[in-house]
Each structure stands twice: as structure tokens, then as C-alpha cells.
Length: 464
Image (cartoon, rainbow, N blue to C red):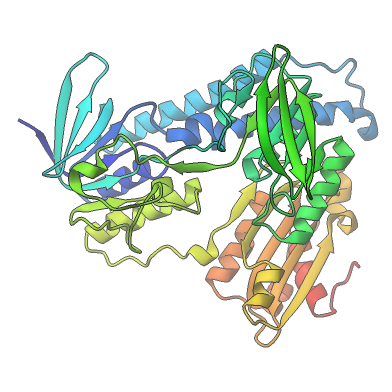
């Protein structure tokens, strides 16, 4: 006899476990199938442990500058094994937290390798060799993503590694070539450069963080070059060869090629959907390339099957997966939820200085036909930033010139990933430039830069 549930969630990442909790809150009998640890790639091998590594890198970097604060830290050193252990402990703690939430919300968790079967069933092969069958009225596929590579480049997890491998290296390499200048590549570039690795980023597009505003990318490039990070843009990786002492990465640009030698090559070119080997063909769910096709509520082409998160395609972000999970469950429950607004999704990169954005870049706004007003405010002119000794970066706001509507917001600087929430909320409420200007911001705070940038767009900035 199969266990019967109202809803079964296939995957326990930030989309799956959030969907499970919301379904339970709505009175549904819920099951969740997870092959590995609850929390998915994000909590265990992505968002969370990488931020722990970044924090260790930031503290180490700050200690080296203690003298500028009138302090003496003596001989500053690090134990990379302890740095990695702290990161893993943080992930482990949060994993236990998700386990607690499943019990609290009466979600039945089945650990094992799941495969979709006809009749809205999932067969789960468990570690003890037994197979259990889970049946439900609705199945939500939330199997997440898997590391992408590039043709001809084999990831051996030793000299050619992916981002998960980069979190658990036994020692800091002397040199590293990072293939891909997106958020993942940029974050690991900061981590390892802060610990002394000679880092080179290779990016095929015109600038690192290709989805971000060009000015922001140029600002981060300048900060990285001051750290000693080398950046090769508009550059293709032709081959990666492993040798006894490391790797040789052959790159080309403008018809000219050269070879970069390093201890390690990190392939950071993003993720594809985890759609292979989960039984989609058994039930006829449509896939476009590696992603499941869905509508605005997460419905697939097969009645009774939904899909959410990275397995459905970009933007591959944990907070998007969670939002999609809630929308899907509320739609199943008949609550008539509004679809996720993909035009108002914050993008965050947790390097130093941080990068955060929401809405249109200046280029995209102009290409969409908007007459725009641009406001900028540098952190070097802000009292709080000067006081805390973190003045790299600026706030850039893009407004529609006719109506004053906030079209886009872009921040490079300390705590950018927290500051962006104000601007996302502003866009949700359809705020205008003058509403931001007239909102009194506490002094001294970094958020004052937002008010000042809005004022700059209209020639009203006070401190520049």
C-alpha cells in the first residue's frame, strides 16, 4: 500500500521545504522527498556556507587593516581548515533547523532517491535498500539545479573543481583561474584573494556580473584590481589541461590566445535544472533544454503536477524558489494568489564590496523606450561609510523622467544586499523619486545614500 498525501514535494531545498510548510499551514497532508540533506544545494553547498566563508575572509582582511582603526592585532594568521569547518557547521546548524520545521509543521519526510511514477506516485529508494511508494493528489517537483560545465572541460573535483568543491578545499591554493565572472565566480574570487590566492577571472561577456548595470560592474572591477585580482573579459576558454603540478587554461580574445597556469581551475558557469533521472519521462512532463516548462502558477503540462525553483529555469535564486513554492501551494489551495513578479526580484552578490540590484539597468530602461533620470551617490561622501571605513562603491537609481517612477536600483558597497530591500519595497508600492527624497532617513546610516541618490537625479542632493 502506498502512503497517500494531499501534496508531495519532490525536493527539500528553499523552494521545496517552504512549499511544504505553507501547504501544511493550509491544512494539507504533506510529504517531502529528499535524496540528500534538507535545505538543498543553497543551504548545504551554496548560499549559506559560502557566506560563512566570505565572512571569514572579510574578518581576516579587516584584521590586516587594524592599524587604520588605531588598533593592534599582532601577527594576523588563519587556519583554513577551521575556516572551512565553521562554514560546514553553519550549514549543519541550519539543516537541523529545517528538520525541526518539518516536524513542527507535521510534514512527513522520506529520505532517499525519488523517481516519478504514473498515477502521481514517487518511488523512493532508501539507504537501507528498501523502496517506499509515496502517492498524493498533487506533486510539486522542486529538485533544484546541478552544476554546469563547459564542453571539453572535465571537472575532476581536485584540480578542476566546481563551487561545491571550492567550499571544502583542504588548503588555500597559491593560484586559481575562475572560469565565469557571474555571482558565484565573483564571490569565490573575493574569498580566495582575501586569503592570498593569485586569482584570475575569465569571463566571456564584456564585463563581470554580466546581468548587472555596467557602471556597477566597472566599479567592482576597479575594487578587485586593487586587491590584485586579474580579470579577463570578452575572453573564451578554449581548453583546460591537467598536469602534475596544476592546470593550464588556454584562453583567446580577439584572435589571440594565451595560456594561464594555476594550481586549480574553478568552473563557475552556473547551473542547469536537475531534470535527468527523476522520472519526468514516466509521466510526460515537458522539458525545455534542462528546465521544466511551467505557467505563472507553477503548473506543468500534466494535470496535477507543478514545478518550482531552479528546475524551472532562471532566475536561479533561492528567494525566487521560495516565492514560487508559496504561489504554487496557494494556487492548489484555491487562494487565487498573484503570480511572482519577476520584474521585481532582487539580485545579490556577496563579495566585498557587495553588489545588489532590482529592476532595470540604465541600458535596459533606455532600450525599453524610457526617458530616464539617473541619480548617483558615492559612499565616500557618506558620514556612516567614512566612520566605519568602508567607502568603496555608490548607489545608482534609474527613474522614469515623466512620472518619477523608480525603474531600477543598483548598489555597490557595504551592506548593499540589505539596503536593496527598501528599493524593492518601493517598487512594489510604485514609489516615485520625490517620495524617496521626502522620506526622512536616519543619520548616520548607509541608507542615506539612497535618499541622496534620488535627490541627485533631480538636482537636489545635499552632500555632493
